[in-house]
Image 1: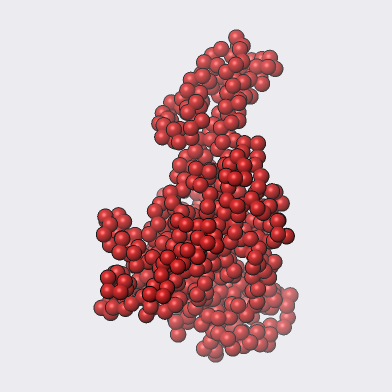
Image 2: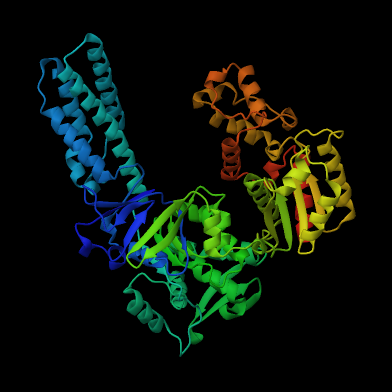
Length: 638
């Protein structure tokens, strides 16, 4: 998602955005206007983290974007803003409609009809265009007719000026398609309301600490007077929801359901507000407790999640340092809920947050819905912002992250790479839901340790490395001082006579003799080979250049045993060819080893999670996967 900020001069934007020069990936963004009077901010997603050292300008930038007037903000998907596209289309229309040629008479009539049908005159007023209705079938038919006429004319041989004319017509159709998609995207993502949640937030009001004191402080320091949630208005917000219609009350119900699942073992939760000294009460099962009895960590997550669950569709929420008073495990719950909760996903919220938390960034690596912007202050008048696809070593250094930061959970799960983490997290969560228990909490109950590419991967899995047993024992013993270790490794069809096979045997013996160490071999080529046959078959449509080719195989009956001992890349290739789909119709999904390449491994992992498949479907005719998940769950819980 890209954001266009429309303004004529610096007086029309908040001072946070024009008193400092902001450069994003070396391009000056504020204060600067392009030829269309727009500053462009690119690469935003559902969740956007602003990171940087103290006093790097990230909070100031956050408040500046929050203060913009809604009509100034244009949301679009492509490289050019809607106004830029519209201007380009309008200019080309002018050249086309003013051109006169006997050869072009028929096509000119059609392009005039096309102009009327595409409401080009109405696009000066974007909102008017968005509310207009287009006969899409007629629109498409006219496009096809124009393109067919162009093809016929080009075959005849025509004058150069006529060729230029036809190129302009084709450009109109191309830009018009992009513009239509962007306008639809804009309509679906246009801002509803905004909410600012400052660092200064607290839940329990009293005679000496009241709402007006906090709001006056925010007003004086940041010049923000409206749309602020500080926590002290939680009582009034709950009371307001209790008297609203069903659809509004549903927001509170969903928030109570979130608390029940994540913190109270699925007990029924009811939140009420009482006039008795303005107390907020929580009915947890049959027990009544006040807000202040729940502990600081839970109060903090309530203050963050309540305005999110009760937000309207398409709201934008700005939060300064959400990690304050949150245990790393609660931080993971916070982020996971925003990304995965079906009710919140339907709201289409956008969140902008400053943070110093490596735990947020750690979780963000696994999601395509998170963007990271790293701030660096050059001097008092200049700040650079770098868009990061994922955190770097420099990022972690800025946040002061050390190796010991991960040694805080009750158990550590060692995996080869990021997709293994995603699979195990999802499987454990579905297993907990199936058991009717609260999900295990990452960074409290367990933490992941990726060993792929580090020394351990060499002496565990590299045949050239000779010293195995003593080094393995020494390393595992050193880590096990801090926590229990569950080590998952791909089988890779290693034979017992190889060095790799012998080391596998040694680890199995070590696992039997140590209560705080569990070695688990996938028993199949890779973790992906454990997936249900239903998912494996459905995913094949993504591997074909044309989705219609999926019709050739969608009715096939495949079993987990069909791909248990073969790399999935080779399995898919053989499956397609066997059913009449030539290699020329395959995408480049197979690695040299016969497995899926890294890109398609990530896509398969996302495909599984986005399918929402539950535990019963996950283990259907898959006893091995059921065994692995159950043993992992027991190991973490013991």
